[in-house]
Image (tube, rainbow, N blue to C red; front, side, top):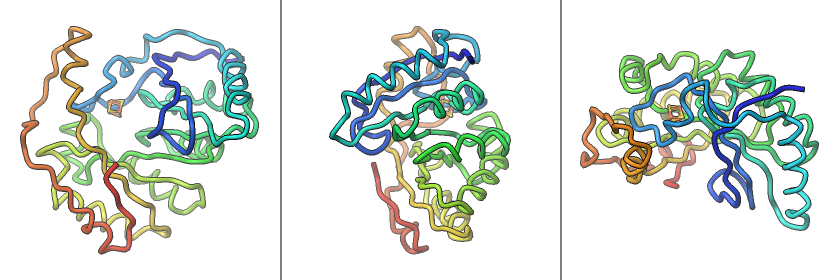
Length: 239
Ligand code: SF4
């Protein structure tokens, strides 16, 4: 039986999948996005240590409550796929409970495929198309992420590509156009959701006595032109 680390749980989440959901936030992330609103989830160490069986039992209890309505569980983070064995064991242990994952896709292809195949829905982030800019703002290259999204488009796993709208960083016509071109070239047209910039992030850093060190201007313009995507036949909305 695997053990893992979880830094938060959110009940009745509404943006993390269909119906009433419980979201588990798994510890650890390979990225260091400047705008990260879950900085406590970045280090591999931290959170509470739990056995997979505890989470499986907890989810089964929730499933009893959801009986008769749409509900399910979402695994988020940090980057939930960093705890592959732990997560796979939970997903296998909860049977037909609806399972969604929220992932940065910044993991090895084998890991990405192993977990995505177990999910009923995948939310995958695609923050920036320009590799150098991606490295600058998140700390790593986007190549692995693009490869994983390419693979996802070759499957029939339901999924949505999410783009956090960061002022002056990626919420630009140019980045949207490059993203739309990339997505339009895939075997399946994956829908896109644009996520408004989280203006509460700074307050969260204050609360945990951490400096919110950003090199972009929060007041910069944010492109909200969803037609840049729809022109390429890609469904797009702002969350
Ligand atoms: S991928 Fe998400 S959790 Fe990881 S650093 Fe970026 S915003 Fe934070």
